[in-house]
Length: 321
Ligand code: SAM
Ligand code: SF4
Image (cartoon, rainbow, N blue to C red; front, side, top):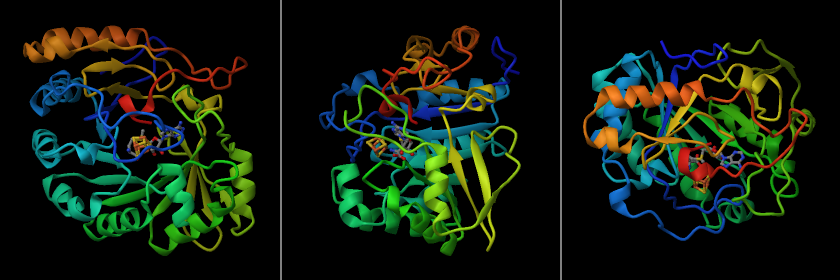
């Protein structure tokens, strides 16, 4: 079993397979060039898998493939299959912007992927295009539909931003309900890589927007989920992920591996240790030693609130949101 110094059990690994992305979301990497990491610095699937395998053997029960945009890396179904064949019981999920999922969802499902969280920030073509800095809406919707049709369990992620998509939150909930999927609203996490003029909505503001259309009541939160869920009176639910709240860090069960082999213990802090050399040498014992010391240094809480607000310098496109 893996634990940190605050006795939190760490059983959830997020693996970023690339820092590249086909979008340039305002809250993530609006100004990055198309590709900036030399190919040889990125771990091969076999090298990433060696770490994933060790983590599963130490008690990791959930693996999420993320990015950057994971679907832009070729042959991803091969990586999915490696994990699924090794540990079919693991909850194997992916976070994606959905743009390429119309072509890939069935392939990923056949390889062993169980769930997909797909980002949908707006149902208006112009707003979606403004946020992603590309005309994306039709393909994202096609990707969501294909993912549902393929049998993947789908959730929708949306980052509510003032004067962008704030007036659509109730409509996004309705759109998801009509498709039998759950919408989750993620509070914007202030970071130094994002557009300087963004203001995100906090939980109470998100709830007030949704209340304009839907009646809902809070649900008991699942023990390890960072999301708080709400039951809609007419059926279905939606969730809010609130990194600015006290509880967010208390139940944190995650560790993150980047495509370059950096192991990061926290979503907020830009701290990490590299397992690249150990993985390239096939040295599992060394990787485990590094993993344990990363967890020993895992901080108690982020600084988005907790009385000392400071934006994060960590790049979300390196190890996912
Ligand atoms: N490219 C994929 C995607 O967009 O779904 C996966 C990587 S992305 C970094 C993972 C999640 O983080 C997405 O749901 C995205 O909306 C969210 N995200 C990125 N930057 C964020 C920020 N500054 N605040 C809140 N959520 C953010
Ligand atoms: Fe790409 Fe996802 Fe970042 Fe948007 S949030 S730029 S889709 S990695």
